[in-house]
Image (cartoon, rainbow, N blue to C red; front, side, top):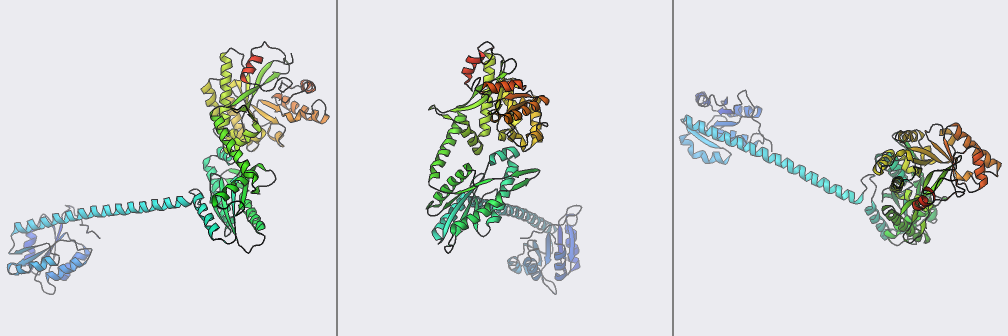
Length: 601
């Protein structure tokens, strides 16, 4: 409903329109109301309606008996227009016309004043009805305001309900179907489809490493791009859904008339994987994405949506372990392997939390003095039942499940605590090397984490060496160099482990401000006996010496290897010729508590 806004004057006076065909009556009423109101006048009903339409007054004093159009007709016109219907109308009438008051009230009149006028009565009734009009407008404003508020609240509620319904069936990040909707559609396809139904699960390899290296914002952007590629590739052929952090699923329905259904599934799967496994540009970052996929076909791999998804998931995990193909079709043996992997993942989480993965220490010796100068900390997982789990098993699992950061953090913290314990026991300080994974080193907060650990344990950073592999730096040598400089500024040294295994080592080795270069043990097998192996190892040692780096030969098991390293200027050595890795207690008893001696004594 439209409201009548009273025009303001300098004095902010209400406007009263006097309508009477006798000018003397107008003058009389004007004199009665002068000073308190802004007065307008009309001598005919038609002129009054023109004024009311152009500039609505706050109140109308309306003579009943007028030629051409009487007051009742004018009132009816005023009340029939939504824009003016709320304006109070006071009829002006002679005493002998009082019998018509009932008619005036029935058509919307607010009151009557009779001729001859009593000035005080006229002023009182005008003031009363203007006050009522103001109150009416105020109440109307409140009603309108509350109506708008309620409408807004209802719209918000409807939007919230729609959002809840949407999120029940769709993924908020990618807009794809979520697990709920996918399960519904699979079950519907199983009930109604006369052909064959297949379910595919596609998982992004090492996504947790990408997410930690680039941040969750770019990680989410990558998932959105992958989702868009899958949706485009599947248009008209499959329903695509997101069923986990970096896991997607596709529902394929095949026509019963198709003879070679396996071939058609493979074609559609190739199209999906081709759309995903490609380089992505994320702001200033270029990311190579690889995926693994598993396929389950109804009815042989599962009778229900839940069983099909479970079988496809098992096939996907098997594909991750395979180096031959990015996808596999389900077979029954995969379920047991998937269960074992899931069990091991749970045990790994518990082992990290309960500190069952601990550092053992392999000593390092100076080649000239043959004295103990340091040790490399190597992770060992010993289950409560005494069974040892190989690092080759639990480190890759930690990377796949996103547990590597927690694992590395625990290990570095444990090494620093051990260094503090040995210092408090009065043992001489040693340089302790800790291995960190490529994913952990690439994490933006890595340097801050290392500083936090040494500050928490009270260990001198100069006694800690961070060992990284070529894989940790090859993706972004400039950022790696910045991190190494930041570590060095706080006292840490950095060693490049497994040097020579990567194909591009020489192109960036001079750019990295590392302190130590470790010769990978894969080169040590033929050293001292094979000329080619000798040439490669000698070249690495010469390079290390020329660059002013500390060289470490690891994996030394024989005397002829030791003689070769000595003759070619290797600085430090470690390996089974001297000692394997041992517990902290054995290390302290056998090495730290003994007087300095040569390792072969």
